[in-house]
Image 1 (tube, rainbow, N blue to C red):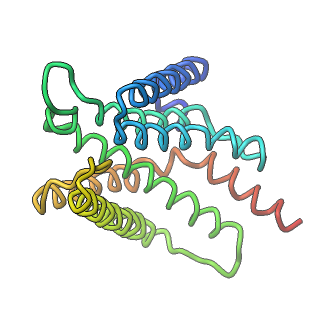
Image 2 (tube, rainbow, N blue to C red; image 1 turned 45 degrees about the vertical axis):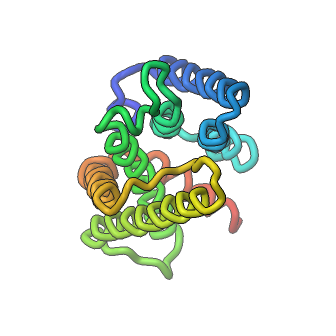
Length: 219
C-alpha cells in the first residue's frame, strides 16, 4: 500500500481538498490584510508559499509529488494558519482557546519534518555508495532529526516573543512557557514515531522520485 492508498480518498478528491484549502488560505490572508493582523499575514503568507513548493518542484526540477503528500503538507499549514485567526466570540485565537489545537498542529507538522528527513536520507543512501545508514538506525535518526528541528523552532518562538515584548509589537509566534515547550516536544516526538513506525513504508514513491532526480543530476 502506498501513501495515496492509505489516505482513503481518490487522487481527484485529494487534489480538490488541497485546492480548497489553498483558496481558504488566500481568504484568510485577505482577512489578515484588511484587519491589519501581522500574525495572520505572516503565518498565512508563509503557509501559502509552502503549499506552492510541490508545484515548483514539479515545474523546475521534474519532481512530481503524490497528491496525498501534497494534501498532507497543505493540511498542516492550513491548520496552523487557521489557528492564528482571532475568534469573533473570544478575545483569543484557536491556539489559545482550544487546548488541543497546538498539540494537533505540532504532531502533524513534525510528521512532515520526519517524512522530509527520512526521504532525503533514504534517497541519498540509495543514490550514493559513500553514504550508508543502517536500517535499524533510521528510526533513531528520524526521532533525533525531528527533535532537533523542534528545539530550533521553540528557540525561534521564544526569541520572536521576547523581541515583540521588547518592542511593544504583536508577536507572530507565541511561546507560552516551559510547560508548553515540553508538551510541544512531546507531540513532536509522537509525530516522529508515527512516521518512523508506520509512515516510511508509504514514502517509497517519493524516495524513488528523489533518487531518480539525484541520479539525473549526475548523468
